[in-house]
Image 1 (cartoon, helix red, strand yellow):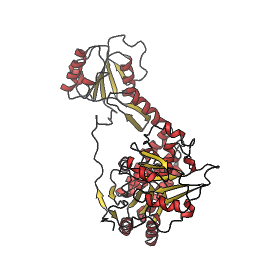
Image 2 (tube, one colour; image 1 turned 180 degrees about the vertical axis):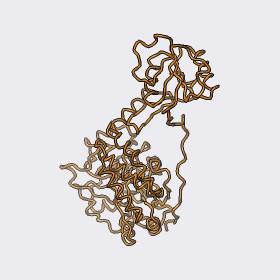
Image 3 (cartoon, helix red, strand yellow; image 1 turned 60 degrees about the vertical axis):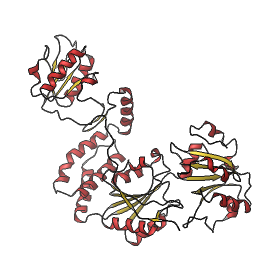
Image 4 (cartoon, helix red, strand yellow; image 1 turned 45 degrees about the vertical axis):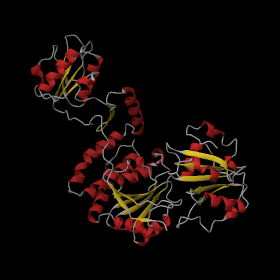
Length: 483
């Protein structure tokens, strides 16, 4: 009998150590001390002025050949003095020597002013990050001064994700906020409004929002206030393990969840992408090991949804492939709970991709068949169609067959499967610790000892695994166990 366990609540992951604290400083109507006469000082002057600050720039007379067009930048034509720091919001300087930098930093700190010395991190209280400007949406990237070029490359990636037009939506969010706050709504209603707003903005980021958008969103908001929306359930595929294979729709579901019920197979890196405030509950099932009863999982899903929560049932791979989705969907529908499904990359697809393998090939494989390696009791299912598994024109993928593979192979060979059919076992597909073992199907069970004893495993069988189809494996960066 498989040992039972109960759903277990997990605290959210704590914030990992930060090299520096990211903050955004309000400078409108305040002044900043800036000293020096380099190109870096000119850039900092323009940046600070663009942020609304009055910039008092201390530099030798004639240091800047071209005048500043921005009226907020006021040249002082002299060296700084200690009395200049009183009342300043920030102090920024660029000097040729450590002695001058140290004196400037000491004067700023004596006045209680945070200080930055350009290209001298040892003297800095704060640093400037690489900026993505979609004001009022502003994104800053810091590498703690270790690799500015890397920070600039990350900024370029983010700028590609958020076109310039997203600034109009950010401005609309600022302007429409008062309409939402006027009725003093609860947190759940506010979050629902802004989720709808965000979904619309990201769908058409280059379009300028208009009065029609505001009207539609506020009407939906008014309906929600009259009749708060019921909870709902999303069955979400987490993919085989690589966080980069998570779909955008799955990511949005994780960001909107109140509670996440997840399998043991879901990578921690994926859980870390979820909404920080979401409650996490482990409801894992492990082959031949302690498992939560399916009826307990279904009851928990329904109970939390009826309490008005947004429940994400997060499953490794695709939720519709050996994921007990039918029971959970039926339980939700029987209770009148709305349920939607977010498909994920299956373990078979992920493993095939890392191996550079096509699961179908018109001369070698006319179809793909997925088979479970164990039933509800942990044993090999008794109702497998062995004749179908012996089909030489099929690619077969066996899920979780670690303890039943030898029996599986014996039955398939008895049904007519060619003993020389190529096969491969893959453990931890798509993850950094992926390992695989290739052999003839009749020899594969004996070769599993070369693979890690833990981690999800699948086996692929079929003619598509023959050379030269598998030649690309030799070029794959993932390690391949010797046969």
